[in-house]
Image 1 (cartoon, rainbow, N blue to C red):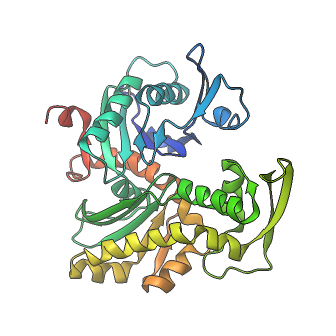
Image 2 (spheres, one colour):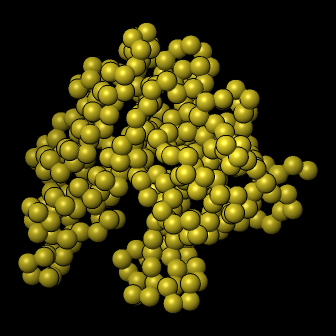
Image 3 (cartoon, rainbow, N blue to C red):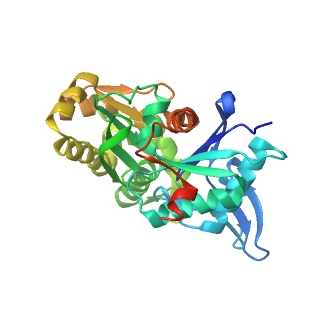
Length: 339
Protein backbone atom coordinates (compact mmCIF):
# COMPACT_ATOMS: atom_id res chain seq x y z
CA UNK A 1 0.00 0.00 0.00
CA UNK A 2 1.45 3.33 -1.08
CA UNK A 3 1.68 6.22 1.33
CA UNK A 4 -0.17 9.42 0.30
CA UNK A 5 2.02 12.17 -1.13
CA UNK A 6 2.68 15.31 0.91
CA UNK A 7 3.06 18.85 -0.39
CA UNK A 8 4.81 21.46 1.76
CA UNK A 9 4.84 25.24 1.56
CA UNK A 10 7.76 26.00 3.87
CA UNK A 11 7.43 29.73 4.47
CA UNK A 12 9.24 32.23 6.67
CA UNK A 13 6.15 32.85 8.80
CA UNK A 14 4.07 29.70 8.33
CA UNK A 15 4.21 26.12 7.11
CA UNK A 16 1.27 24.61 5.21
CA UNK A 17 0.97 20.92 4.32
CA UNK A 18 -1.31 18.98 2.00
CA UNK A 19 -1.89 15.24 2.38
CA UNK A 20 -3.02 13.15 -0.59
CA UNK A 21 -6.59 13.90 -1.64
CA UNK A 22 -7.42 15.47 1.73
CA UNK A 23 -5.99 18.82 0.65
CA UNK A 24 -4.62 21.18 3.31
CA UNK A 25 -4.33 19.35 6.64
CA UNK A 26 -1.88 21.57 8.54
CA UNK A 27 -1.28 25.31 8.70
CA UNK A 28 0.89 26.55 11.55
CA UNK A 29 3.56 29.19 12.22
CA UNK A 30 7.05 28.02 11.22
CA UNK A 31 8.37 28.61 14.73
CA UNK A 32 10.23 26.32 17.11
CA UNK A 33 10.99 26.73 20.83
CA UNK A 34 13.87 24.93 22.51
CA UNK A 35 15.78 24.87 25.79
CA UNK A 36 19.30 26.19 25.18
CA UNK A 37 20.64 24.43 28.28
CA UNK A 38 19.36 20.93 27.52
CA UNK A 39 18.97 21.36 23.72
CA UNK A 40 15.47 19.89 24.09
CA UNK A 41 12.66 20.88 21.73
CA UNK A 42 9.78 22.30 23.77
CA UNK A 43 7.20 23.20 21.15
CA UNK A 44 6.66 23.81 17.44
CA UNK A 45 4.09 25.69 15.42
CA UNK A 46 1.23 27.48 17.16
CA UNK A 47 2.35 26.44 20.65
CA UNK A 48 5.82 27.89 20.07
CA UNK A 49 4.39 31.05 18.48
CA UNK A 50 2.38 31.77 21.63
CA UNK A 51 5.68 31.80 23.58
CA UNK A 52 7.18 34.61 21.45
CA UNK A 53 8.49 37.38 23.71
CA UNK A 54 7.28 35.62 26.85
CA UNK A 55 10.09 33.16 27.70
CA UNK A 56 12.99 33.17 30.19
CA UNK A 57 16.55 33.59 28.92
CA UNK A 58 17.27 29.86 28.60
CA UNK A 59 14.37 29.26 26.15
CA UNK A 60 14.79 30.43 22.55
CA UNK A 61 11.83 30.87 20.22
CA UNK A 62 13.15 31.10 16.66
CA UNK A 63 12.12 30.96 13.01
CA UNK A 64 14.56 28.53 11.33
CA UNK A 65 13.53 29.80 7.87
CA UNK A 66 14.47 33.39 7.00
CA UNK A 67 13.69 35.26 3.77
CA UNK A 68 12.48 32.09 2.11
CA UNK A 69 15.64 30.03 2.78
CA UNK A 70 16.80 27.82 5.64
CA UNK A 71 18.91 29.66 8.21
CA UNK A 72 19.25 26.76 10.70
CA UNK A 73 19.47 23.27 9.20
CA UNK A 74 19.08 21.27 12.40
CA UNK A 75 16.10 23.20 13.77
CA UNK A 76 14.37 23.05 10.38
CA UNK A 77 14.79 19.27 10.33
CA UNK A 78 13.38 19.00 13.86
CA UNK A 79 10.43 21.23 12.98
CA UNK A 80 9.63 19.32 9.78
CA UNK A 81 9.92 15.99 11.58
CA UNK A 82 7.41 17.11 14.23
CA UNK A 83 4.94 18.35 11.62
CA UNK A 84 5.29 15.22 9.48
CA UNK A 85 4.66 13.09 12.56
CA UNK A 86 1.52 15.12 13.25
CA UNK A 87 0.27 14.71 9.68
CA UNK A 88 1.33 11.11 8.93
CA UNK A 89 1.42 9.48 12.34
CA UNK A 90 3.26 6.15 12.46
CA UNK A 91 3.37 4.41 9.09
CA UNK A 92 5.71 1.88 7.56
CA UNK A 93 6.09 3.50 4.14
CA UNK A 94 7.66 6.93 4.10
CA UNK A 95 5.86 9.50 1.93
CA UNK A 96 7.00 11.29 -1.20
CA UNK A 97 7.26 15.02 -0.58
CA UNK A 98 7.16 18.08 -2.82
CA UNK A 99 8.43 21.24 -1.14
CA UNK A 100 8.35 24.67 -2.74
CA UNK A 101 11.26 27.11 -2.87
CA UNK A 102 11.60 30.74 -4.03
CA UNK A 103 12.53 30.98 -7.71
CA UNK A 104 15.73 32.95 -7.02
CA UNK A 105 17.56 30.69 -4.53
CA UNK A 106 20.96 29.18 -5.28
CA UNK A 107 21.84 25.51 -5.80
CA UNK A 108 23.41 25.44 -2.33
CA UNK A 109 20.20 26.75 -0.74
CA UNK A 110 18.16 24.23 -2.74
CA UNK A 111 20.41 21.46 -1.45
CA UNK A 112 19.84 22.64 2.13
CA UNK A 113 16.06 22.43 1.65
CA UNK A 114 16.32 19.01 0.05
CA UNK A 115 18.62 17.63 2.74
CA UNK A 116 16.35 18.98 5.49
CA UNK A 117 13.23 17.32 4.14
CA UNK A 118 15.03 14.04 3.45
CA UNK A 119 16.46 14.00 6.99
CA UNK A 120 12.99 14.75 8.40
CA UNK A 121 11.71 11.48 6.95
CA UNK A 122 10.63 10.82 3.36
CA UNK A 123 11.50 8.30 0.68
CA UNK A 124 11.75 10.80 -2.17
CA UNK A 125 11.75 14.60 -2.30
CA UNK A 126 11.09 17.08 -5.09
CA UNK A 127 11.52 20.84 -5.26
CA UNK A 128 9.13 23.16 -7.08
CA UNK A 129 9.41 26.91 -7.65
CA UNK A 130 6.82 28.92 -5.74
CA UNK A 131 5.40 30.76 -8.80
CA UNK A 132 4.71 27.42 -10.54
CA UNK A 133 3.05 26.00 -7.41
CA UNK A 134 0.99 29.18 -6.95
CA UNK A 135 -0.32 28.98 -10.53
CA UNK A 136 -1.24 25.31 -10.16
CA UNK A 137 -2.96 25.96 -6.83
CA UNK A 138 -5.01 28.77 -8.38
CA UNK A 139 -6.25 26.43 -11.10
CA UNK A 140 -4.44 28.20 -13.96
CA UNK A 141 -3.64 26.05 -17.03
CA UNK A 142 0.02 26.87 -17.62
CA UNK A 143 0.77 24.26 -20.30
CA UNK A 144 -0.20 26.45 -23.28
CA UNK A 145 1.90 29.07 -25.05
CA UNK A 146 0.10 31.84 -23.22
CA UNK A 147 1.57 34.16 -20.63
CA UNK A 148 0.33 34.31 -17.04
CA UNK A 149 1.73 36.56 -14.32
CA UNK A 150 1.75 35.71 -10.63
CA UNK A 151 2.75 37.85 -7.65
CA UNK A 152 3.18 35.65 -4.57
CA UNK A 153 3.56 37.81 -1.46
CA UNK A 154 4.64 35.59 1.41
CA UNK A 155 6.18 36.24 4.81
CA UNK A 156 9.85 36.42 3.80
CA UNK A 157 9.84 37.02 0.04
CA UNK A 158 7.70 38.34 -2.79
CA UNK A 159 8.04 36.26 -5.96
CA UNK A 160 7.00 37.82 -9.26
CA UNK A 161 7.04 35.59 -12.36
CA UNK A 162 5.75 35.18 -15.90
CA UNK A 163 4.80 31.55 -16.60
CA UNK A 164 4.17 29.96 -20.01
CA UNK A 165 4.26 26.35 -21.26
CA UNK A 166 4.87 24.89 -17.79
CA UNK A 167 7.96 27.01 -17.18
CA UNK A 168 9.11 30.37 -15.85
CA UNK A 169 9.95 32.88 -18.59
CA UNK A 170 10.95 35.84 -16.39
CA UNK A 171 11.06 36.16 -12.62
CA UNK A 172 12.24 38.40 -9.83
CA UNK A 173 12.22 37.97 -6.05
CA UNK A 174 12.59 40.58 -3.33
CA UNK A 175 12.62 40.53 0.45
CA UNK A 176 9.87 43.16 0.74
CA UNK A 177 7.06 40.96 2.06
CA UNK A 178 4.98 40.34 5.18
CA UNK A 179 7.80 40.31 7.74
CA UNK A 180 9.52 43.37 6.23
CA UNK A 181 6.21 45.28 6.38
CA UNK A 182 5.80 44.32 10.06
CA UNK A 183 9.30 45.62 10.78
CA UNK A 184 8.52 48.86 8.94
CA UNK A 185 5.43 49.37 11.13
CA UNK A 186 7.49 48.76 14.29
CA UNK A 187 10.12 51.24 13.11
CA UNK A 188 7.49 53.89 12.35
CA UNK A 189 5.86 53.52 15.78
CA UNK A 190 9.25 53.83 17.45
CA UNK A 191 10.34 56.89 15.47
CA UNK A 192 7.02 58.74 15.47
CA UNK A 193 5.52 57.87 18.84
CA UNK A 194 8.50 56.45 20.77
CA UNK A 195 6.34 53.35 21.26
CA UNK A 196 7.92 49.91 21.26
CA UNK A 197 5.59 47.22 19.88
CA UNK A 198 6.10 43.49 19.29
CA UNK A 199 5.90 41.41 16.11
CA UNK A 200 2.40 40.11 16.85
CA UNK A 201 1.04 43.62 17.49
CA UNK A 202 2.55 44.92 14.24
CA UNK A 203 1.00 42.03 12.34
CA UNK A 204 -2.46 42.69 13.82
CA UNK A 205 -2.21 46.39 12.93
CA UNK A 206 -1.27 45.45 9.36
CA UNK A 207 -4.19 43.03 9.02
CA UNK A 208 -6.88 45.23 10.56
CA UNK A 209 -5.98 48.79 9.51
CA UNK A 210 -4.27 48.64 6.10
CA UNK A 211 -5.86 50.64 3.28
CA UNK A 212 -3.38 51.07 0.43
CA UNK A 213 -5.79 52.55 -2.12
CA UNK A 214 -7.65 55.29 -0.27
CA UNK A 215 -6.29 55.72 3.29
CA UNK A 216 -8.34 57.93 5.60
CA UNK A 217 -7.45 59.97 8.68
CA UNK A 218 -10.73 59.23 10.47
CA UNK A 219 -10.29 55.43 10.53
CA UNK A 220 -8.11 54.59 13.53
CA UNK A 221 -6.94 51.76 15.76
CA UNK A 222 -5.53 51.76 19.28
CA UNK A 223 -1.97 50.39 19.32
CA UNK A 224 -0.56 49.29 22.67
CA UNK A 225 3.08 48.93 23.61
CA UNK A 226 5.82 50.29 25.87
CA UNK A 227 6.86 53.91 25.93
CA UNK A 228 10.59 54.21 25.31
CA UNK A 229 10.71 57.55 27.13
CA UNK A 230 8.99 56.40 30.34
CA UNK A 231 9.49 52.64 30.19
CA UNK A 232 5.80 52.15 31.04
CA UNK A 233 2.79 50.72 29.14
CA UNK A 234 1.26 53.20 26.70
CA UNK A 235 -1.21 53.36 23.82
CA UNK A 236 -1.66 55.63 20.79
CA UNK A 237 -4.31 56.06 18.08
CA UNK A 238 -2.96 55.17 14.63
CA UNK A 239 -4.92 56.05 11.48
CA UNK A 240 -4.89 54.56 7.96
CA UNK A 241 -2.88 57.41 6.44
CA UNK A 242 -0.08 57.04 9.00
CA UNK A 243 0.00 53.29 8.45
CA UNK A 244 0.25 53.85 4.68
CA UNK A 245 3.25 56.13 5.29
CA UNK A 246 4.86 53.41 7.42
CA UNK A 247 4.37 50.73 4.75
CA UNK A 248 4.93 52.84 1.65
CA UNK A 249 8.56 51.93 0.89
CA UNK A 250 7.97 48.18 1.17
CA UNK A 251 4.74 48.26 -0.85
CA UNK A 252 6.26 50.29 -3.68
CA UNK A 253 9.27 47.95 -3.74
CA UNK A 254 6.74 45.25 -4.69
CA UNK A 255 5.35 47.56 -7.40
CA UNK A 256 8.87 48.08 -8.77
CA UNK A 257 9.48 44.32 -8.83
CA UNK A 258 6.29 43.81 -10.87
CA UNK A 259 7.29 46.63 -13.22
CA UNK A 260 10.80 45.19 -13.65
CA UNK A 261 9.45 41.76 -14.64
CA UNK A 262 7.03 43.32 -17.14
CA UNK A 263 9.87 45.34 -18.68
CA UNK A 264 11.95 42.15 -19.15
CA UNK A 265 9.06 40.12 -20.63
CA UNK A 266 8.74 39.50 -24.40
CA UNK A 267 6.08 41.79 -25.94
CA UNK A 268 3.80 38.93 -27.03
CA UNK A 269 3.56 37.70 -23.44
CA UNK A 270 2.95 41.22 -22.11
CA UNK A 271 -0.14 41.31 -24.34
CA UNK A 272 -1.34 38.11 -22.66
CA UNK A 273 -0.77 39.66 -19.22
CA UNK A 274 -2.83 42.72 -20.18
CA UNK A 275 -5.63 40.36 -21.21
CA UNK A 276 -5.40 37.86 -18.32
CA UNK A 277 -4.43 40.26 -15.53
CA UNK A 278 -2.06 39.67 -12.61
CA UNK A 279 -2.75 36.81 -10.20
CA UNK A 280 -2.14 37.67 -6.53
CA UNK A 281 -1.38 34.86 -4.07
CA UNK A 282 0.06 34.52 -0.57
CA UNK A 283 -0.99 36.10 2.72
CA UNK A 284 0.35 39.52 1.71
CA UNK A 285 -2.08 39.67 -1.22
CA UNK A 286 -4.91 40.16 1.30
CA UNK A 287 -3.66 43.64 2.28
CA UNK A 288 -6.52 46.12 2.01
CA UNK A 289 -6.55 48.07 -1.27
CA UNK A 290 -3.54 46.27 -2.82
CA UNK A 291 -5.37 45.14 -5.97
CA UNK A 292 -6.73 48.63 -6.60
CA UNK A 293 -3.31 50.20 -5.99
CA UNK A 294 -1.60 47.89 -8.51
CA UNK A 295 -4.30 48.61 -11.08
CA UNK A 296 -3.99 52.37 -10.58
CA UNK A 297 -0.17 52.32 -10.64
CA UNK A 298 0.49 49.84 -13.48
CA UNK A 299 -2.80 49.93 -15.43
CA UNK A 300 -3.16 46.14 -15.30
CA UNK A 301 -6.11 44.29 -13.79
CA UNK A 302 -5.48 42.17 -10.69
CA UNK A 303 -7.19 38.96 -9.63
CA UNK A 304 -7.01 37.69 -6.06
CA UNK A 305 -6.63 33.91 -6.09
CA UNK A 306 -9.29 31.87 -4.35
CA UNK A 307 -7.88 30.74 -0.99
CA UNK A 308 -4.79 32.88 -1.63
CA UNK A 309 -3.03 31.87 1.61
CA UNK A 310 -3.10 28.13 0.81
CA UNK A 311 -2.62 28.51 -2.94
CA UNK A 312 1.06 27.51 -3.05
CA UNK A 313 0.54 24.50 -0.77
CA UNK A 314 -2.37 23.26 -2.89
CA UNK A 315 -0.17 23.65 -5.96
CA UNK A 316 2.49 21.38 -4.48
CA UNK A 317 -0.17 18.70 -4.05
CA UNK A 318 -1.39 19.09 -7.63
CA UNK A 319 2.20 18.97 -8.94
CA UNK A 320 2.44 15.23 -8.24
CA UNK A 321 0.03 14.69 -11.14
CA UNK A 322 2.26 16.75 -13.47
CA UNK A 323 5.75 15.46 -12.64
CA UNK A 324 6.44 14.47 -16.26
CA UNK A 325 5.34 17.86 -17.65
CA UNK A 326 6.95 20.31 -15.21
CA UNK A 327 10.45 20.18 -16.64
CA UNK A 328 11.22 23.76 -15.63
CA UNK A 329 10.91 24.78 -11.99
CA UNK A 330 10.61 21.18 -10.77
CA UNK A 331 13.34 18.69 -9.93
CA UNK A 332 14.09 15.69 -7.78
CA UNK A 333 16.46 16.06 -4.88
CA UNK A 334 18.25 12.89 -5.95
CA UNK A 335 18.95 14.55 -9.31
CA UNK A 336 20.57 17.77 -8.19
CA UNK A 337 22.73 16.01 -5.62
CA UNK A 338 24.77 14.51 -8.44
CA UNK A 339 24.99 17.50 -10.78
